[in-house]
Length: 120
Image (cartoon, rainbow, N blue to C red; front, side, top):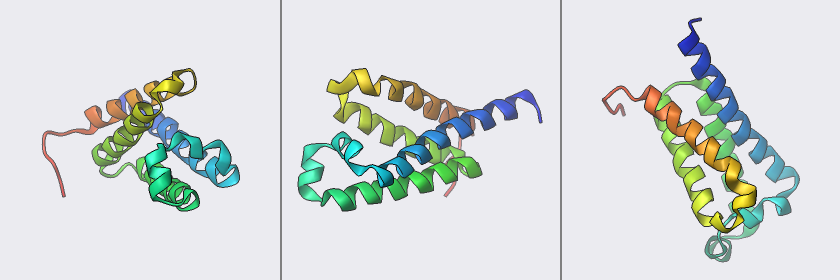
């Protein structure tokens, strides 16, 4: 395996780990995680449904990133999700500052995997 592929593989593992850890942890301790959702979403959708749905989304996204197929799309989806978390929790920067680095990892994977064409 050349260095480039190894580097990208390590980035994929790191990003997938974050998504999978957050998803599993939110199932085990939901009250530690529900506060990261904006109030307007919690008012619209039951907290249990909101958190469970997002956790399943994170598991699917983490496994997709590990799989490595269509990495551009999975990385963009992860980037948008992380950007939303950062924007809606900006007042908690002491806690979410790490998410900025994770966002940049997702963006790096998207930039690396973009081949100039969109495939559907």
